[in-house]
Structure formats: structure tokens, C-alpha cells
Length: 252
Image (cartoon, rainbow, N blue to C red; front, side, top):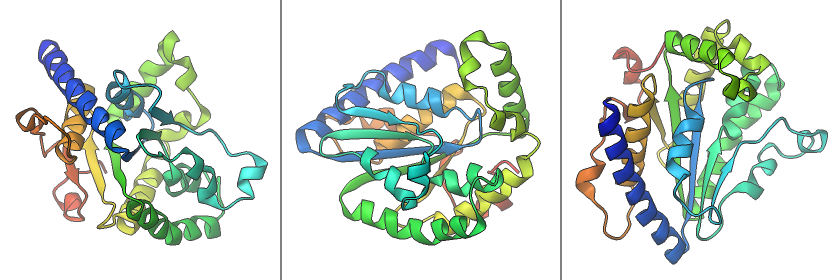
């Protein structure tokens, strides 16, 4: 995407986000967006573009670290509940409870029975959220193996991104197939009518950010909405369907 066009579109979309945020505050709405995906898929950058011009008093980004011993002994979803939005708030989850279906499963940070319990309970948990009038969206940023390798390599060489490097990153490429299998199992079990997964092709960061923002804003209501500015590319952002595999729409 041309840099000048990207900046123009980004500005217009951030104006729309401010309009939406104003309606969230005025009407006491509760908004929650989940961003999942492989390492280096662009979750941080996408969330940053969403939130950078919104009120920091009513907007939060949640990126939880490893659970404490006390949290490990609690109901799995318990550590996430305090971070959910209340009236007038927007919350972005940079990874979420779906860690259990991805990183924890692949890296064996959880037991098999804990994984299976999560997969059986998550539907009820998200059903409660949507019935609590939560505006709830789940995005999975899908990146190709080649692009991930390129970004992880660049991350190691960039002195400003040293904080992003982790032992898990080092195994991302070697465990590519295991992560693919975990992702596919997650989609099959947790793509609910009331809380579907939206897949985002994220090899091109600019196109990713622009189209996720357009997709989200096109699916919510607010005053003075500019619908013409919110026409997104359905080849970049689309709702998960098993047919996506047959069409090569998800990185294998």
C-alpha cells in the first residue's frame, strides 16, 4: 500500500474511531476486541493504530504475562474477568484466554485435561459475555511462514524491539506445524454463531491495519458514520469457514 494513501486512510479511520468511542462513552457501551495470531503477526501494531487517538481513561490494552501460582490454582477464566470492559470502556486483548488453545497447548504449558476443559467451557464463557451486551469481536492475524521468519529476524536485529524477543519466538518456526494444528482445532471448536472468528491476512502490515479497522467499524453503529470510508477488502478480512482451507485462504 502506498505510504501516502495509507496515512490518508488511517487518519480517516481514526476519526471514525473517535466518533465511535464518543458513542461508547455517551451510551455506556462495553466493547471488547481480541487479537490472536502467531508470533510477529502484527497484533501490537494493529492495536496501537486502533487506540492511539482514543481517550486513555476509557481505553485499555490487556497483555497478561505468565500466571502466578495463585492464578494457576484458580478457574482458568478468572484472571481475565477483572480486565473485561465496564460501561463506557473499550478493551483490547493482545492475546487472551485463547492462549490455552495455542501457545500453552503447543509449548505444553498446560496439561491435556486443562486444554480439553478450556475447549469445553469457552463457549459458555463467551455466551455469557455476549448476553451481557458486550460488543465482542475475535480477530486472528494469519501470517505466512516466510513472512514470520523475516519479521522474527528483523526483530532480533532491531535494538528498539529487544523486549519482543522471547524463548517462544525462537521456537515459532520449528513448531510451525504444531501451531497450525492447534489453530485449526481452535477454529473448529470455538467459531460460534454468537462469537465468530474473523481471519486477517497480515503479511502486509498497512493493509492489515486499515482493513481490520474498516471491518470493525463497518459492523458497529454510531452517530455520523461514514459508511463509504468503511468498505473493507474481503480478501484481507473475512469470517472463518472450513471452506477457507480448500481455497488456500489460511496459511498452512
